[in-house]
Image (cartoon, rainbow, N blue to C red; front, side, top):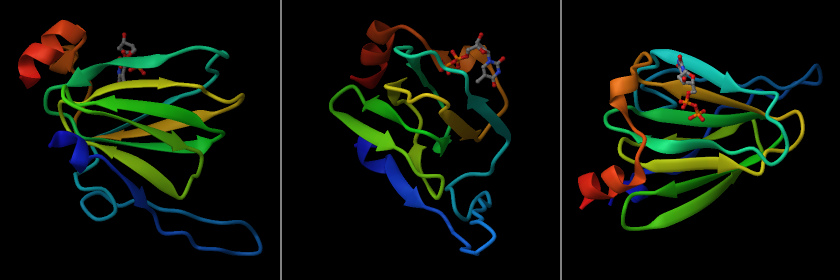
Length: 134
Ligand code: TYD
């Protein structure tokens, strides 16, 4: 099931008295080549992001600061992950409906993606998503 492919991945963490360092290499620490990076920030309390799926896109979400919840749905099953560490992240395979909410103040959600932005690659209607997954 696609939801089983979605999982928390631990990232390298170089601990140092001067501060910690984490790095991410495409096709090594995440299971795809990284083609795009974007981030959500200045999210007002109570706001919800996402609310769509991607036909072919692979993504990896990291809470660079603060915390938030990621609710996943593959059309058959649902799962919720709470992200609050900058040395681990959540891998999302294609065709997963996601909603992100419960953002703490000053939180930053960084997203690594396997392709450049393309609106025709989104599934934005939940009914269509269910049709495509059944
Ligand atoms: P969207 O992916 O719907 O946001 P989220 O899933 O985080 O709630 O994108 C919001 C808007 O930003 C939409 O109009 C498209 C634009 N956008 C880009 O132009 N490039 C990008 O890489 C992303 C992710 C979004």
